[in-house]
Amino acid sequence: MRIGLVGVGRIGAFHASTLLSLDAVDALVISDADQVAAKRVAAELGAEQVADVDTMLASGVDGLVIAAATPAHAPLLRQALAAQVPTFCEKPVARTLDETLELARLEAASAVPVHIGFQRRFDAGYREVRRAIGAGELGFVHTIRANTHDEMPPHASYIPTSGGIFRDCNVHDFDAIRFVTGQEVESAYATGGNQGERFFVDAGDVDTGAALLRLVDGTTCLVSSTRYNGAGHDVRLEAMGSRATLAAGLDDSLAMRSAEEGMTFPPGPVHRTFMDRFLPAYVAELTAFADVVRGERPSPCTVADALQAFRVAEACDRSWREGRVVPMSEVPDR
Image (cartoon, rainbow, N blue to C red):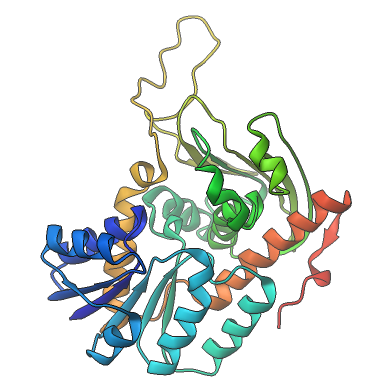
């Protein structure tokens, strides 16, 4: 297959290398607004480089991977759907709820598959939690705890365009909660604060957030995020049931130490970045996308799925700004 890739920043360059390692991918065509960066990555990997997306689509690619900056996601996805090219798009689908709703409608009206990059759906631990819940091994699930804790903040220039901590960080947790439980969120209450760099306040954002979600079946979900987890990158999900409790991300890399005397767990080393933590999942999701392009499986995470996670993030953002519980019925879904 001949795959096009738009965007060669940190995640884009990583995806380029992963795509070329797949047996199903015969050729990779790269484009980026930064022509110098595109030429460099293409030369390093032996890929083809073209000037723009129009040229790429006209060249006859079988599939498209969108790893450009967030503001480019929506227009690129519209372009790919119009060209009828199966597409993988990093989250978020778009910067706003209205744009996400529009793209969900376009997807529903099209036969072109779109795969959104929520890589936790391909992490072995999260998949095992999903299986165990589905099999009834935990009994009834009464509580979910999920967290996304970054070791250090991104560059200050990223924050104003990130959409805020709930849309940028916790949207992964919101999708993962839907993925493992099969349940939708009924209401959200969120809060947040700043004790770190001033640029979060200047952007109208927080550096630490927390949300309390109620699922439609009554399950309580406790969700947290921070840009300042100095111990390391810590992403986990714990499902607590009437029979058993199961955790994803609870291994030797756990970025935490015990205060109890004589305890040596976890021995480390800890993860430092999300790419380190989810390396196998990133490879698995692009392998799945290759199957989607070949028509061997449906999209494992559609724009419609991404919309539901974005709606929860929207509710949380509204909640912390307004200081109240936000029912999901207040957030449009069509």
